[in-house]
Length: 203
Image (tube, rainbow, N blue to C red; front, side, top):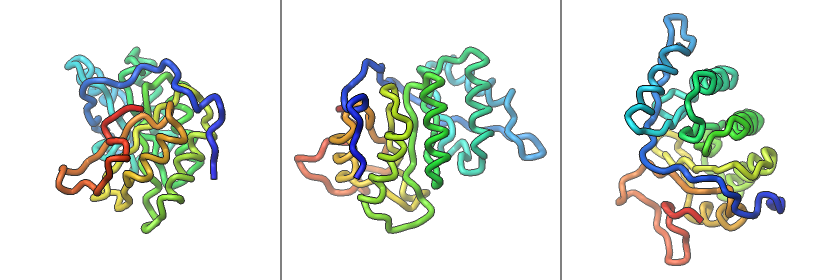
């Protein structure tokens, strides 16, 4: 089992994301490549409305984008002067090296957090397996600025994130596993107990 390094076990002074973060659409050119200029224009418009940016999630068609395309789009936002402190790009991937690369790039770019899906291709993965996946990304990135927002969207990913897994990640990485984004109505949330940290609370 992965054990957090001392540098990751604390709670560094990284300001948490606040307010509303909007899913960011990814415009495409006729040849199927991302339209960088329109992407930047769209993100600037959202920021001008007082919203944060949740890029490379479901509405961004993240699974249809290659790693180098996501990196290029994020770099374009930064080159255009958009504040990374208002960004939470999706970095989850089935392949761990891709998740690690995207997460490291987001952190080094100054993003306030990353939105991370569990590896979703294989179904029926145990909480222990999912924990090891998240833990390996955190350990490999090894940056105290990292804030992981777990993305629970089983209707799409078909792999959920249980409260037990959330609690374990918060315990092992109290300054890193910052929160969880749930995409379910309240009546479909998994059962929890009084000893489980509520998903909306930051440790």
